[in-house]
Length: 539
Image (tube, rainbow, N blue to C red; front, side, top):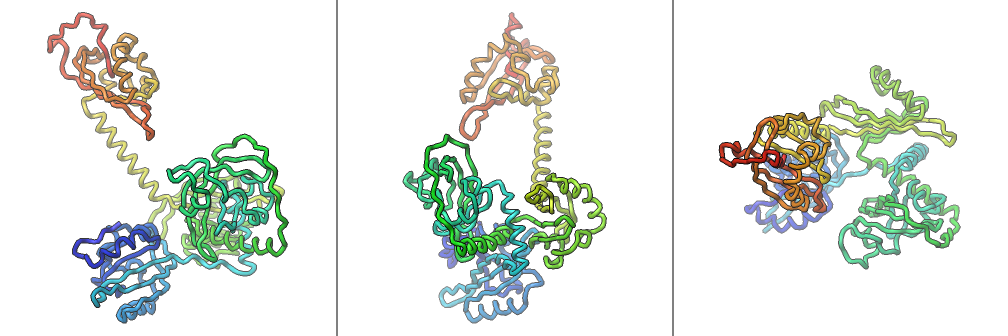
C-alpha cells in the first residue's frame, strides 16, 4: 500500500488508522470530483482489493476515474458543496473497477481539517449488495439459490453470536442432521470445544468460538448426531449479513477417525413458527450468498427459459436482469451461439456435467478468456429439469500462464546455450532433467536419460567414486568436487563440479542439481592417469 511522503507530515497521523481498517479508503486533495489537480495521495489495501487499482494506478490521479462519466451529477455537486461547508457527506454512486465491471458504492466524504484549514478529504467506499427480490420472484430465486448452495461439496455454516443462521446440505450430511430446521435449531458440537490441532500457534486454551472471532483456521473433532467423531478443518471469516456482522465457516473433513460410543444427541422439537422463520431467513440469506459469488451464474429450465441470472451475468450479457429472466435462450444469445451450444445442451440434458474454455469479445474489455461450467439439475426421480451455467473470467490467469511459459522457454534457451553440464536428480538418484550440454558430452539424448538411475548412465565403478559426495549433498550439504572425468564424446578432462541440494518447504532434501565445468584436458595438465577406467563422472 502507499506510504505518505515526508512532506505530507500533517497526514502521517492518519496512516496507522487507515492501514488497519477493513474499509476501502482514499486520501485526496480538496475533493471536487472531476476538477483537475485534485489528486489522490494515498490508498489502502482494501481499496486495491475492491477496485483492482493498485497504488501506482491511483496515486496522483483525479478520483473521477473511479466513478465514470455516467455518475449522478447532483450527487457529485453535493460532495463539493459539503466539502466547501467543511461537512461530511454520504452519497450513492456507481463505481468502476479496473477490469471494467461496476458496482453500487456508498461513498462517504470526510473533510480533514488541520490548523483551521481544509485541504484534504478521507473518502470511504463501501460496496452495496443487491437488494433481494420479493414475493413470488424471491421464492423462485430462493429455490434456485438453495439448489446451487446445496451443490457445493464444502460445508457452509453462518452464525452470529453462536446462533446458527444458515447451513447448506453438505453441512447437514457432515454432522448427520436430518433436516435444515434441526441444524439451525441445534447449536451443535461446534462452539464449546477446544481445537484438536492449531494451524497457527496461539494459546492452547483457546476454544473454537474465540478462534472464529479471530478469523482463524483450525482443526477440531466434533461428534456427529449418530455418535461418530469426525476430524474437520474449518476456516472462519467475518462477513456483513442482514441484522449485523456474522461469521462464515467453511468446513471440510480431514479424515474419518474411529467411532466413539457417544449417545445420540436429543433433538429438541421445533415449533412450526420457528421452522417457518428459519426457512424464510434461510431463503433470504441464500439470495445474498449467491449474489456475492464472483462468478457469472444463470439457470435455464428444460424449455431453455431463463429462470435466474445474477447481476454479473446480466452485466456480461449487457442486458438488465428483468429483461433476461422469463425469455428463451435464442432471444438472449445470437443464432450462431445458440446453434453452437446445441451438442453441449444435449449432453447436459443427458445428465453430464461439462467444462470447457472459450473466448468472448466483451465491450470495453476486449477479448476475454472464459472458463464455463454447465451443471445439470435433476429432480427427485433423477430427471434433468434444467441446468446451471457458471462462467469465470480467467483472462489474467491465462496471461500469467503464457508469461510463465515464455519465461520457461527463455530459461531453457539460456541453460542450453551455456557450455556447462547441468543435471537434476531426485532423492532416488534418478535423472529428472539434463541440458543440451549433457547430450553433447555423453552422446545420449534426454529421452534416453530421464527416469534412469545414475548407475545406468555412469556405470558402477564411476558411481562408486563419487558416492561419498552424493551422500553429503543428500544430507543437505553444498559439495564441491574436482577430479578427472572421461566423457564419451569429449574424452578425459579435469572437471570442477558443484552439487547443490534442493529442499522442500519443510527443509527436506528431495533432490540435487549438478553443475559441471571442464577446466582442462587431462593430458594438458600432466596428470598422467594410468587407470582410465577409474575416472569418476559427476554428470
